[in-house]
Amino acid sequence: MSKPNPDSSLPELPLTYTSSQQINLSQFQQEVERLHELTVWGRWLVVSLLWLTVGLASLWELRSVLELCLEDFTWAALKYGLIFNRLASIGLALCIGMTLAVLVWQSRNILFGRPKIQQQRLEKRVLQIRQQGRRHPLWRWVCRQ
Image (cartoon, rainbow, N blue to C red; front, side, top):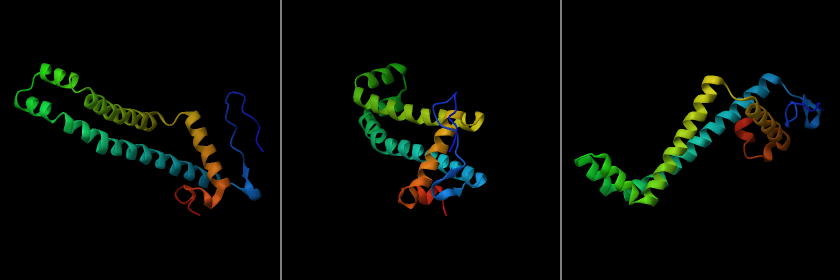
């Protein structure tokens, strides 16, 4: 098995898994990358669905305010329009916040690489997917064997 890592609560990557088969490290890293790519797509899917539901409903509720702002934009009109339509404002803020959170998360991963703890979680998840085998819903997309 593997030795526990003293500076992390997650175990080190074991070199073997079920059925005493050896993990090919380059294949394993490709699987980790595929899982990360699925995570990125999943986050953008959630943001898209949020915009298509909550975002559109919020914009529809704010249509009179937006019309007024298109005619003659003032910060006061925008401010009072958002204050008097709190539920729509909260929905719009949620959509904008989630979009910015995913943008910052993905930008950090692109510019600085994934944090060690996130990399370990992805590796652990890939090992769990491999152990569960074809019964796991992500097996088809992550392992591709």
